[in-house]
Image (cartoon, rainbow, N blue to C red; front, side):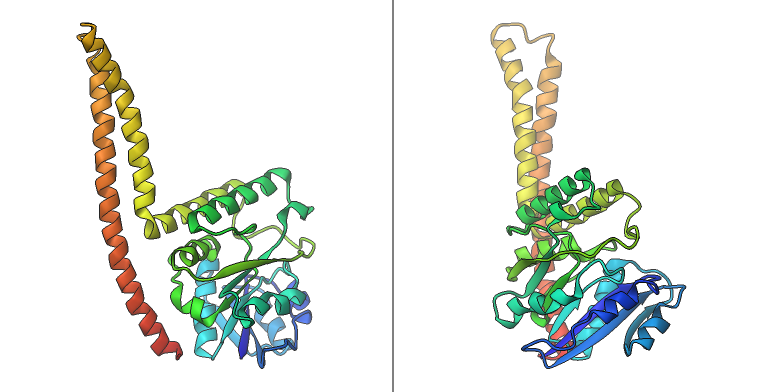
Length: 313
């Protein structure tokens, strides 16, 4: 059983030593532990520092490609080099590497294919009250979209089995965290979480400039993933809301018509008809989106087979 621990890095020469110094060297049930550094366009000595700590596995980007691409390229490298489990951590030392042995245990026991480290965001001191509330809301939304119950869907400290990585397909350019959870829920990939603590903050996030950008990007990723895998439910709700909204002015017009006062209220009839037509169009869009989902499912099954050939059984 081979474990790859991948560390996406962007100018992490000052924090990377703390990450590498606390890496586990032995885990029960794991035969080999390999460290993979993903250099996402660093302009400092990140790679040299990693090499000085004995790291021999690297994925290097000539320019910054973003977290999602770094994750995807790291996974490809790890699986090509025989990984059975891939753990993703961060180069800023946010996550406790000492928790990695516990993080992989549900996979080793056959209880889950994905394990998420729950940062227990309520207890993180440097998170503002607003950020804590938004993290909880985001996790609730993602959990509902995926049909799961995860307290910290935004956590990037995760363990993935080879089986789950072959079945997951990253298409977003922002962050893979939300998308993989929605996919896992749709594809019925077993996922669980374990509580962890976090290390003191070392720097500001480079993934987003402020919490509102993070909310927008995360929300977009959730909606995109939901549209990809559960379009009927979304368009059905939109149709219901539009239809109900359309019936109100339509019924009002009929009441006025019965009272012989409808002549000056044609706008109610027009508004009602417009909303009802919009509801029907939304329903048609849902049907088309569902047909697209079926085609995507067939394409992904073919892609899964290609990945099995690429990475081996």
